Length: 81
Image (cartoon, rainbow, N blue to C red; front, side, top):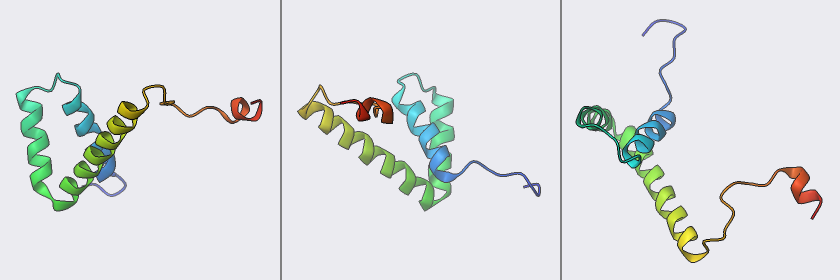
């Protein structure tokens, strides 16, 4: 790696790969790339699993209350209510 260049962080790479897998349009080549990345380090797998748990938890919340807000309100919106 060159001095001054930075590889993407593990959480950012995990998020990119997780999103790609969840898109439903991931190619076989992309799956091989993701699997190679996961196999390269236990930190990669751990970050990927954290995202999976968060995704599952969000699905449970939305299942229980489909009207739950999925995006935070701006501060100005909250202040006027």
